Image (cartoon, rainbow, N blue to C red; front, side, top):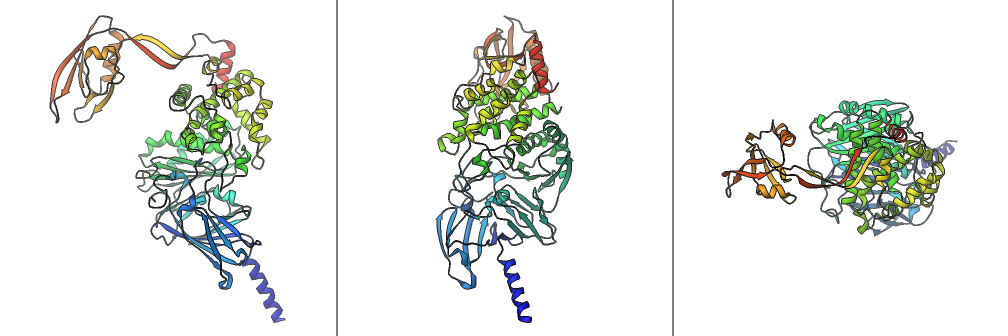
Length: 618
């Protein structure tokens, strides 16, 4: 009987040890040269040979980073000392056999934020919100895709992460299955897709919680010099999140969401700041400035990332739903995932009363200007999206936040126009999310047809001509529908002060001529030279507290033929010596050419008023 009990006990213990989960152990109390050690007990393996991989890329990054670069000291231990053959196939992949005899896999992980001595790390810097940072005893910013590998063909297994942590540290994350301890935490995740979708930030807790409709929102903050705290961020986000809740018809598609903010007090290696979206969280790396100066930046960035709970969580193509972490394939519809999200982030703030219509239109027109001056305006947007990982196309990627957002605005205005104000992009996104959803992907080639079925033939034409086609956006036609005149080029004749580029000399407290490339005819007649410092205009001293008033008065009172005098301080060689001169010219109107100008029509039709009111929620 006793022997039977021992056999049963042995069998039960074997089941517990050799279960069908990935069991990871991570020690955050021992960091050596910015490296953390990881141990994996793999799930049950039936095949003789496996390929163990680290992600080449993850959704939302749109760039192949090859996170296997940051793995070192990779070792495989066999059960009872069994010999295991390990062959490195490429930077991310190891071939292992006999796989059924694996007891554990161990390796070290480098952080990505400040590593430059690994292959390609200088030329292929990981955007910080998509990378990992280990600061011993202070903070561990963990993007799970940069730390945890998977067995190819075995993504749909539970991942159980056991963290040994410094005492008092808290794991801020959008995940819910967490068992907290004094020195150890256990976090469980359904599969690899959910794992890489869930960053974790370990530090001494500075957290706040907001309830937004049905959603519990966690705000976690790390500010090394204590310039920002979670309560300030939460108060900054609360009005925004409620506006976004209303924008999404009063409820959110997630029960928990986490904002993870890391404020950095040095320049980032990538040279950029920003965030990376996830389905249930978003991770931010921003400069640690005074908190009040960050308010609108926090709102704008957070609004964009938060709206990703719609796309791609509930609306996505097969390329995202069945993402290939080793050989990623891109979807054609970045205009939807990023462009529509960026548009909604600004539109929701206007409809919610946080910003006004002037700021919304100004922001969209600036994005339009950037899209046609900095990017190829005749490249098919779907083609760019599909081929965005190719080097020659990748330079166009950032246009998803410029032209992509303007596509969203055009689509919204057109929908409001054709529906008599009753249907817009908010309704369209809700209908698409209902048709698809988290667990159902669409085919890239079907999306425009599906949108047309929900809306109008004219919307299908717009998408095929201006999104998949090469025809530039019909800005004049679209803006006319809300009573706004649009001119590709507007010529006027106006008085001028030379059209030089001006900057401010803090030592002398004077404006100076910093550029003359765009100097007009009046400026040439006046005789401005580089580094001239402006002292007086028509005898009135130009001080910082009166410059605006003085220049405004000049434009309001000057007449054709008036004598204009400007006293300047002109540098004499090197040093702080100047020659005072008075420059003279006769006032006259100069031809001014402005591109992409807008203005409200003097009279709006009832249809235009209806569309405008519906668009901005008046």
